[in-house]
Image 1 (tube, one colour):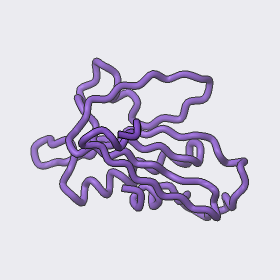
Image 2 (cartoon, one colour):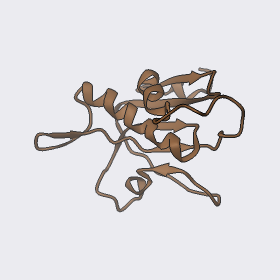
Image 3 (cartoon, helix red, strand yellow):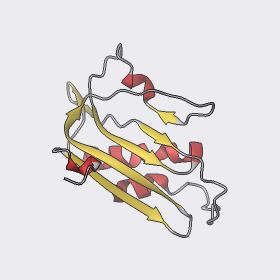
Length: 132
């Protein structure tokens, strides 16, 4: 054991970055849906699906978690991991619907250098798909 997240059986971690943009995405994917919770601190949190992690929420488990650069623009990263999971039929099942549950958090790295003029769509969704 190396005291890493990947030491936990059933947890996989993938990462993809773009050196030109000087940013990236990490995907934490659970082999089986996992119970998760959150404690939000600080004055400017950037979160997606954080309400699902509250104890009173209907959703009991998550399929993955994304961590991304890009500030609020990086919240799209969870969509890339959702796409990867959906292609594999993974997610919360409600009759014939399958909804991958992927909360995410971001950090502000828009002023760290790198080319942030990526055009219409930030790269985080595609980076997350590659990380998955």
